[in-house]
Image 1 (cartoon, rainbow, N blue to C red):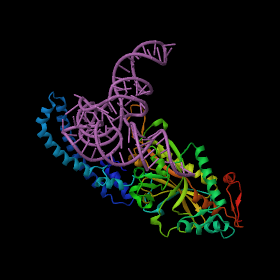
Image 2: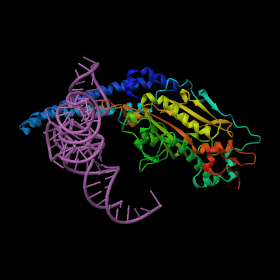
Image 3: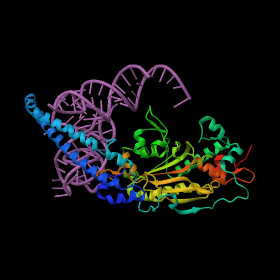
Image 4: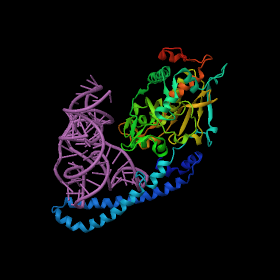
Length: 429
RNA sequence: GGAGAGGUGGCAGAGUGGUCGAAUGCACUCGCUUGGAAAGCGAGCAGACGUGAAAGCGUCUCGGGAGUUCGAAUCUCCCCCUCUCCGCCA
């Protein structure tokens, strides 16, 4: 959620950011107009309420309350009538009132971009910051992971389709074990870096989903139960970020760093026909998510550290990857700035996203009311939140299969995973 | 799922229709005291929003919502959550 105060103080900054995202900045003027209307209505309503409170107090103080009440009755009735109208007007306009025009506008407006985000309307303008390793070379014709996986008997797509339809897969034997090895490896590394491991609910309320900014833009992409009003998390970013919603954290307990291994559920409704083969894009996948809550002045540095933490995992796994700074048009709804980690996927002959590390600044905190207090006397301030995967299990597994495949059809296991796998390779049979 | 109890400030805990945003205690902050500390004493200590240059003023919030009333933390209704017992169950 954008800060209405900021829009009031510096509308040009908000317009500029919207333009850079390829949006019509006209909403800024609309917000200003509605906000003005709302505040004048609020002032009027509060004035009337104050008058009413004053008269009521007078009755309360009177010796003969009944008489006083009788005397002031006409005035109060008149006030009550006016109040009703004024309050209705306030409700129509209030920014925190669902379905008010101001609320609609604000809830659909994405975060203000960081100044360091490059211009550009789509992914082609993203900036490659650094590359580690090189696209894997093969002395034979490498197989895509879905073929490789089926030949090795560790991936079963037909039966997944039988059970659940398209965009599901089944990991079998060493495949399932490899996923578990990755999970353990990721969580162990996170713990070593001071992340607190969390095992959160995978079903969250509408309020929780709303508070992290998932609902306004991605409602269609989520699985939900309407009776219970619960949503399956599309990412552990949601429960982890909302963890401290409504709380005021002591500044000296920041940053808070959390890691959670969870399944994630997405409808992938807008991705029909995209990445239909293999396990790249599934309705259900697992990942380890990393979330930071920081003081405002530390979030920029935190983004670098968080990205580094995710990167370290790829390097340890000896996977070729690159780090990309997303351009204005490619940055999501919540973040002010995002680095994507992209791993080399031979079957795509391309780098594919394996982690997205974002600084959401105070955008989620404002909705979720995640605050900090610097000392006993200080006013609470909004915290900043960051998130990134460290890493997506399925995509890492896929990358290992494809990049570590051998001429004989087996797959070597990266050294750091061998203790977890208790094997050096996966071969058929 | 059934029965009961309860949800008040950071915590504990009073408050059952009228200056109650809320006694008191603890915790916390500042000051006095002290060689230093403890104890003691004094003061402060909820959040949001609006208004204002500021001091301040105003409005709202006692789980959430609706209602009764001139006036609700206190009364009524609905919902949510927690705890205890029973049932069921991984």
